Image (cartoon, rainbow, N blue to C red; front, side, top):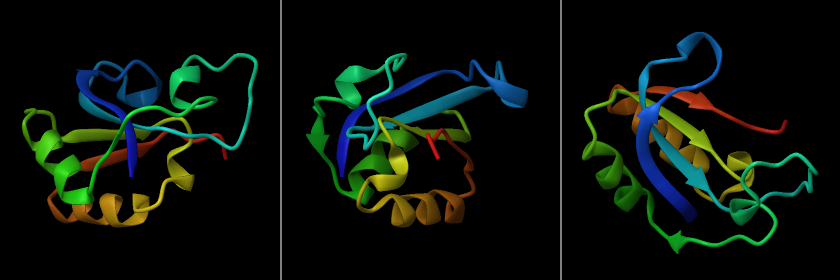
Amino acid sequence: MLISEIFHSLQGEGVLAGVPSVFVRTSGCNLRCNWCDTPYASWAPEGSQLRVDEIIAEVRKNPARHVVLTGGEPMIAPGIRELAAELKQLGYHLTVETAA
């Protein structure tokens, strides 16, 4: 899966605003929104090809139990369902930020 970045921060939106979170930013998007705040992960995808187990290893380095799958458009990333299922199996709370 092409991953632009994985980082720890506070969720900034919605009912979970302020909750410590790990953000997994996939790279690539099927839309070209003028207001996109992450064109580096959308219009010209860049990042590293990571396996699901490698992504999980990075997530586990952080203390947060909330994971945000974002992008680009995470729902078009090959392996996203497997990643989400594995994170849920490990007890993480998931949020998916999607254009859908």
